[in-house]
Image 1 (cartoon, helix red, strand yellow):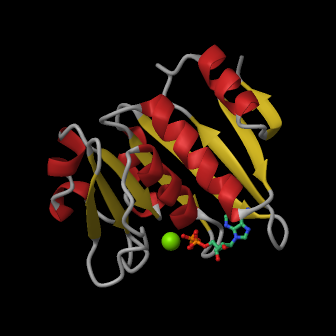
Image 2 (cartoon, protein in one colour):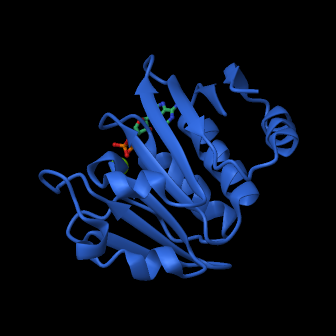
Image 3 (spheres, protein in one colour):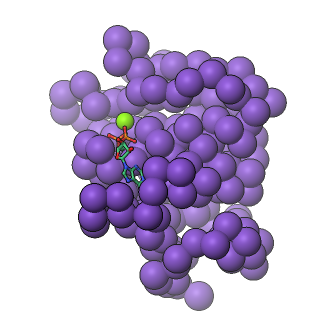
Length: 165
Ligand code: ADP
Ligand code: MG
């Protein structure tokens, strides 16, 4: 199943991150793709908010991973600077993936194995206007579609497309 949401402001993208993180719970993995400036970091700011983290979340620039502590840990990984395909196990990401924390990875397509892990939410961000973004979401199969639809409706999201059910 997949769906496409359109957001009209950074705050709306943040709210999407917050809502999806609430649904996903501990141990979730968000694998994010899409161009620079498309809103991946902004989305993760919403994930952080869902976990009660009030530190400012910015992309890890000099490190590969930023770690935050809220209701559960949040590991924010950015593979932007990695040239070529990345081996998740070489990077030592398994410690994060096996814990109860939430893992959010920008440029996840550089580490293809991530996309096949259990509980992975795949998100692809596109810039469709100055303040407009289209976000394609593939939730893990375990997710209850009715709950997802309800949460998106409550959030007032513009859903462009539902596919696969
Ligand atoms: P990425 O991490 O994908 O490179 P960022 O989240 O760092 O992108 O940056 C997104 C930029 O786009 C921010 O400057 C943000 O203010 C701006 N922006 C404008 N509209 C939106 C929107 N609808 N959703 C997310 N970001 C938006
Ligand atoms: Mg970023």
